[in-house]
Image (cartoon, rainbow over all chains, first blue to last red; front, side):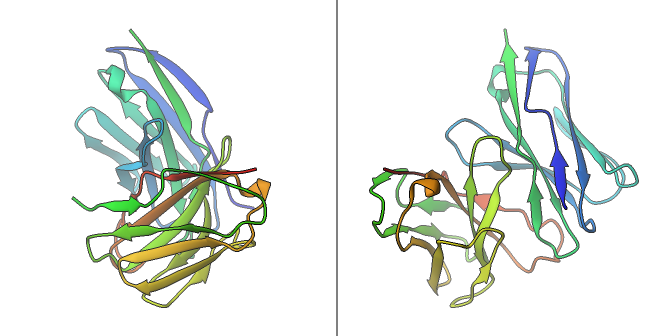
Length: 109
Length: 116
């Protein structure tokens, strides 16, 4: 079967760095996405990786290793507004998205 | 900015009632999707549509149907609501075909349905 694993919950301190991991086993691979979802709100797109390596976008970076079935989202200089759930999703060989259950990130002052 | 608007944020219905969830997008996106989101589970695809009057079953279509009479509107219908359909329902849209680049999804804010 197809599977996306990510930690259920993480806690970090304001101003620090946090890495949220995502491992996947899917039928084929056509890209990996990270979305951010604040409580009670719509998920919003953060990043897309289709080739191995690091994609940097301001305070957020996303890394992909296709051979290891692994990605991480790196958040630097954490702010209180970064408290949210982070959803990892992989597009499979049929171009359908398989979603992880999400990681709830709690930022403490 | 692309906007995806879901007509109802919160609904409470009784078992057996017919439920309509409406979704409208304003950026001429071709693709529209309905997901449900439950605690501890990833988003699960109910139905999707790549064109007007076209629909495809997702992973969990049982108990649901959809309608896409106009490009901008995609409706989810629960013919006879059951308690196990209590959930958050998310509508999303995207531009172009599934194989064209990132094809990012834009989501609505969600409709939280409670079936008593």
